[in-house]
Length: 432
Image (tube, rainbow, N blue to C red):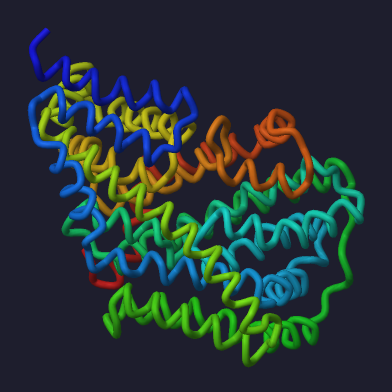
């Protein structure tokens, strides 16, 4: 074997060994990068330089703001109001509370941009409501974590910002618009499945339909939804950048929680900021060490090796896309989303582009794919949160979620092979 091959084995092999030993992913990326640098004779300081370069990007400033906004809105009374609005809209249907679960995730996910925040905020409220009405605990928890994946697709999403930064010349506004239809379709698909199950198992209906109730709950929650509207339309219409929009969302959420709804105090706010800073630190460390790891992958020409391997196996577009999806699903089961985005995008995106896939289309496909990974063991963060809320065992919850995996995988294939679902809205908005 030549020196490059040995270095690649050291880099990737040591990373997976450290992951198997339960090292934090950020540390595993950093240590494996140092070991590889030592072997190829490059200064160790280059790892530190690339970590700094990875996080020294203006567009990444949006990420902390969106995370803080999500934390504040989760504790500031937003969840209750969105659940009431969703219940007024669809709670009257057979299995209405399960469909409410999907709809409130559409609302809240579009504000928080985070699957984990969605589950942590809505789960403790809606899961007990469902079980009280007679829904099985496994079903209530599974639909809660599955519907939360909409938050990754429906704008604003900080993972879209990370992808745009790594992919290069990709517009954040275009990505926001690209995720809108897939996110809504995912919610509809899950809601349809819930309705079918509700009819099959005779799950209860909610209160009778009332137009007055819809207007009352809409009035109560309109200021919360205003955040989503301002951020999405502000970015897509070019009124302000994604970073400015994130800053607005952060300030507006604090204003709502402290002044308008008065659900939290200044003391509570400091605690929430502390919690958000821990999350931000984890994300930024991951992005930094992933940048160093990714630089070494590029230096060792791993993207070219993978490209030649995949395209050497087949140049058929369907086969190549299935292979890419399979690789992303495997990575999603093992690694954090931010790390996967920063490491795999420089490798897999050029392959997708070689077979004619638009970078925006690839971004939406990848984010849904990795969203499924958040629900799968052994490293499914959202799965763990759902289990922690209900006290269920991870294995039992994962087994109960299998029907939802099938629904989401079907949506993934639809988004992968019907690009118009992703690209129509960005095209109408003039991005393509």
